[in-house]
Amino acid sequence: MATDIKSLTREELESQFKDWGQPAYRVTQLLDWLYVQRAIDWDAMTNLPKNLRDKLRENFSLQNLELARKQGSHDTTQKFLWKLADGQFIESVLIPANPALYGEDSDRHTLCISTQVGCAYGCKFCASGLEGWKRNLLPHEIVEQILSVERTAAKAPPAGSQSAPRVVDNIVVMGMGEPLANYDNLLQALKILNAPWGGGIGARKITISTSGLVPQIRRLADEPLQFRLAISLHGATDEVRNRIMPVNKKYPLKELAAACEDYQDKKGRMITFEYILIAGVNDSIEQAKPLAALAKKLFAKVNLIPYNKVEGLPWKRPFEDVCEKFLAALQKQKVPATLRREKGHDIDAACGQLRLKTERELAVN
Ligand code: SAH
Ligand code: SF4
Image: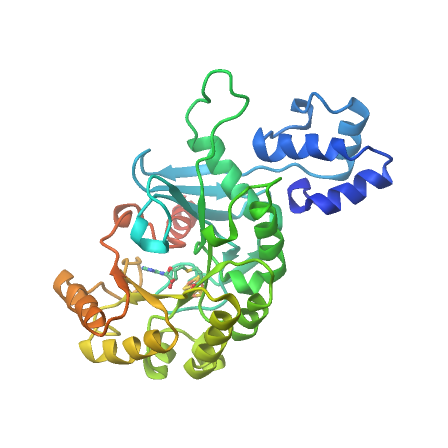
């Protein structure tokens, strides 16, 4: 299958256009159609000569995502289920700003994007891992999640304006899949989303979440772009992590902590620990001690997230007072910590849940 045009960087397009004997300003025009106008069809690109449009059509695909299902409303969390060209489903979640969460300004929207269909890492509590890994997303399928949401969610453009306003200004790579297991496609997509000619979203407004792939965290530390890093910790001892996250057997806490330290040193940015609170698994006050120690050692902040129930899995979220006590224990240790007082719980907002539900329904019908 042809490469999609939105999998290419400006430099790659320039080199292609040069081979075709096309002047460089044509690339600028094309990029405007792709990332400002968000065009979904070659024929919309009226200022490109027809022979160039034909050449593009012959050589590249121009895909967008088909909206299969949407939940939520304009001013709350909205969840998008997309159908890909090969019939697979992925999800993106649009979240109104919560300034405390990832340091973003208020009055903004964060989009949570997927990087794989399914996930190979099989964390015991997670819907994305339940049916295993299907495939990696291509760069354009990652990029298109932002463009497709903006096409769907943007209000009508102001009079006289050529394009709809930007909706997404923060990205969290926390949807389906393990982003660092699809490293090259992810980095290519994030380069495009970060570039001023592309998505125009600052690297510091992009957070990558990983379950703890140590070699890739080290590789990411050496990239020039200053992405924020979040670690799905969920346990502050090997005992707890081994029980719920198989990846910990390969990369135990000590190695993970060392890689985080390396990232911290090279980037000088605060790391975030994601910590899902699961009743009877990791929510006891004793667990808050090693967590606080680790967070302090790495200058990390902690996001506590009460577990979202996944149908078919036995895990439960703790009672509210248990979560509040856990938070207070961290704060007492002077660890910067927040507790998510849930948005989107009612619409299966945790990663992979809407896809799982839809696939189960499709299987029944
Ligand atoms: N694979 C990456 C990114 C995707 S998961 C990672 O694991 O970091 C995004 C976050 O959602 C992770 O922190 C994950 O542990 C969490 N998560 C998964 N299932 C959840 C559930 N049922 N309730 C709350 N959070 C969940
Ligand atoms: Fe994969 Fe992340 Fe879910 Fe673990 S938590 S199964 S790594 S998506």
